[in-house]
Length: 188
Image (cartoon, rainbow, N blue to C red):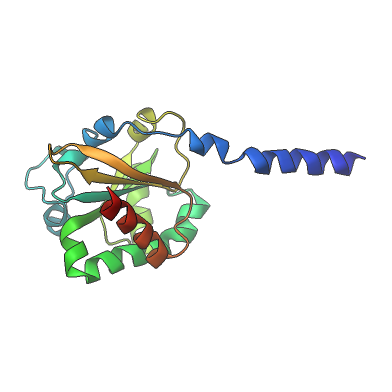
């Protein structure tokens, strides 16, 4: 009898596991003005189109589309998905048209600069990663952001951003994930 109750409890958890993410939202204006440290690497600054020092805002990234990965060094799903995310970056960078239009960044929620650097080196991440020790990205969402979460932003004519898509969980397959993003970009 106890097994039946456990099974029913687990079934209820699985049935309602997605409801929290259905209501999940991020304030696109707040994300656009989120301040991050300017990368030390000249290549990363060039990639983002940032020429100043100190901090910059996400809205200063010079591209039509920005894919923001919210990750944590301690997240086993982020670690497992790192290869797929790197493949996504390579797919974008290998296509001249996409390379001009799309940028990727990672925000290490709750992570220190040291932790972000460990993640970057261990998983050979080529796109810019930023620490978020103060959980700033968490504070602009309607509920705690699970990791990994991918937020795709698109620049509007007035230079502000709109959120095209929010994907909670692993990318699984880079090509299919990129297609989903491009379908959203081309649809809107």
